[in-house]
Amino acid sequence: MKRIILGVLLMFVLLPGVTEASPYSAQDSILSGKILVDQKNNPAPQLTDGDPSTSAVFDYTRTIFSYTFPKPVEVEEFYALLDENKGLAVRLFFTDGSNDVIRLPTTNPKENYVPVLFNKPITKIEITSGYVNTKRLYEFDLKLKRDKIPPGKPTGLSALPGFDEIQLSWNPNPENDMYGYNIYVDGKKINSMPITRDMYTLKAQDYAKVYTIYITAVDLSGNESVPSDQVQGTPIQPPDTTPPGRPLGLQATPEVGQIKLDWTANTEPDLDGYLVFQDNVQLFQTPIKTNSFVVSGGLSYTTDTEFYVVAVDTSGNMSMRSNVVKARPIKPPNTTPPPVPSNLRAAMSADQLSIETNWGASVDPDLEGYYVYVSTDGTNFTRHNSAPIPATNYDITNLQADTVYHIRVTAVNIYGLESGPSNTVRIKSPSRNTTVTPGKPQADYWDISWTPVPGAVSYAIYYNNQKVGEVPGNVTTFRITKAMGYNPNGAIQVVDVRAQFSNGSSGGSNQPGRPVGSGWGMAPKDIITNSMFIIASLSSLVLLGLVIGIAPRLIKMLKKSIDARRRAT
Image (tube, rainbow, N blue to C red):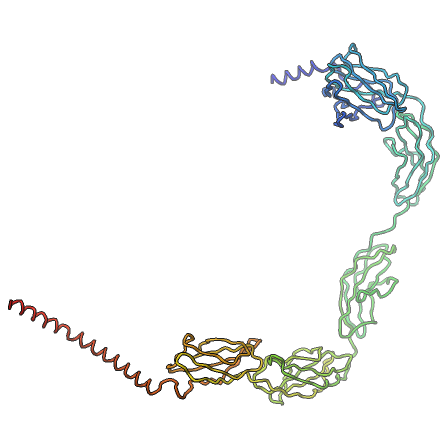
């Protein structure tokens, strides 16, 4: 609290005893509210803010405050509020390129009113400290030199009509104390402050009205000239650039030989009509007035045609396109089936997994496609494809091995009428099994070979139902070793070779089972060897049993013998 009181007292001591920052009226004041800058271009608004409690600090001649006037002015006095009875130097720059300095003497009071005796327009001022001890400047202002002579009559006023406006321009007045111009429309001033340029855009939207316009010139003293010559103008209505709304609800209804289009009508008052597009091509140039249209040309009975609609207004603006619809017309009934397909051919595919067929086309404008029929007995044919195929070739897959297939083709049109069958072709699928030829069994391995299978990409080898290896499709031999589980003396010896195909299927072999012959399995010497092994094993078991049975008796006999020897000694 003490600090606040001391601060207030200090403020009263330092500030001059004035209640008004500038003694000049708003019309007479030139610098009030204008921002001065120092020589480093730093703003110093406190010199003209109307608040005598703020100030700018001088450092003798090192600090300079300046202001450049937008237009030359004539000044009759300046006002300065200082903190000491020390001088102030004010430099005035004139329109003729010269400049001069007015200094405040040290005997002047803190609040100074200094007349300006130079009767020349001023373009710029600079304020510096005139003496060493000057420290603060609280307020500074210039008083405008007022006159009673109005500016001359403005000339060259013209009015150029534009969209929603009238462009005004005129010749600038030559007076040095010009402030700006007032604009009068139909006898009424429309601007609150003078217009400082020699042009103006008058906004107007009454396109049937003729506006009467004149201007006056105003100087810095508030003197207003006589009116200029009157001009007249009418604004131009701008072109309509807003398109209609997008047509909604477009529907296409197939009819015999044509397609009917319907949509919801637009509600814009300036609507001119609609344009219809078929497969992105505009059908006509002049918009139709109704919200329905029948298309009867350029249509296909086998494929859909696309349609959309746009709305057009009287200014030529086009809307966004409607939703797109697709349709094909209904063709008049046809009772004639298509011609029979010709020259049917069939061949096995390269991988031997399918039958590739092709045939000559059936020429019919209503053709939808072809059906392929397959039989394995040559009598009962079954349709292989559920829907008509448009191409003249077809692959029959999922074949059974070693089977004769009978194939023929028919053509069908869009009305479901089917031709008679084509020529029938006959083709046999290859066997997927191989024949395994076992080699002579050896003590540590067994070599086998097999016949190749057409289309096989690899072969899987099984020994006693366990897979022991796999080889590429170009290999037809394999060696089964003991590491793979081979046992030359095993009671079961079964080998199987299965062909593997690219579609994941596989074949089999002739399953030779346990081959017989010289040097295989239980030979006579093997019988003797195995018999002796069995007898030796049984003898060992019998001997072990005898030892376990007589052991207690032998222990008793040994104990008696030892006791007898002890007594003898």
